[in-house]
Image (tube, rainbow, N blue to C red; front, side, top):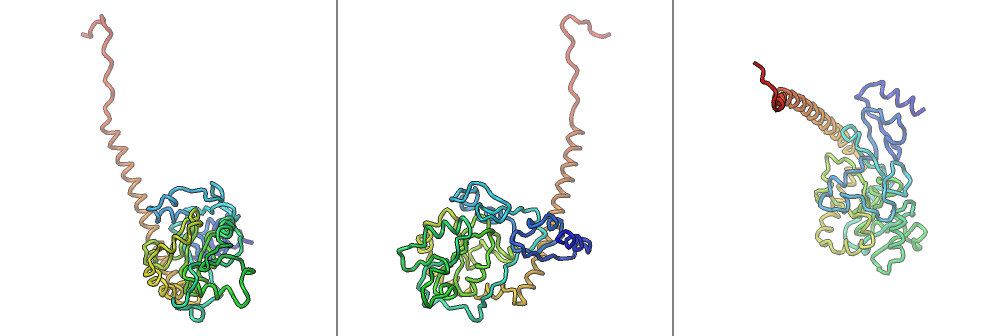
Length: 312
């Protein structure tokens, strides 16, 4: 069925856009890898390495306790590897959230928790996070599963009480949790070495202007110190911006689809520029090869051996 569907999409030409909600994106089936354009939750795993150049953590794959290598499958046991093959063809978006910033978003005042994570240890990274912080002696830290909630507490309530909310990798780097936390006005903390942001062409995620914090998985034991070391003014500036971000990234908003169209236009432009650069590079390589051939001088004939008569 998947092969037939993908073949039908391909037959309609390159202007057709396919929406893939599989957690592995194009890697879910070889048939998806031949589609012209795709909207997906999954993007190339090298985004952090390309945009976090000031930190060596992301430049080299560091074994933080979940294996040295990477895997292109949703196992949750190793870092996830998604190729950059379709970097100029695809648009990455956020999956929908059942929450709504119009009713669930809360202001900065009254948030008594520094950071929180309520979820199951469904991956190696989440297991390490749970082991490091589930029994924390600090009253401003809450890490645990749904069963750890006290009477009267809910997942939504914890997000509304927290300044920062952890968004670690699950089986794959993208997570419904990302949109959950910003709908509640909580600043997300991305804990990953292969995360790819949504709408990365439009939004400058690594600029510091987006309400977001990046932490490498190897630093989970120092999370509290890392977040406490940030200036309170930074958090106070970021927290109101979560409402704007939630509105923009919510699939129920019209802006969400306008951003998809804009991303497609930017992707097309990037692909055309990459194609032009490739053509120019090939042209100069051929021109250089012809120049080398033209100026190459044939080696001189060896001198005659001693005692040999010279030709008359």
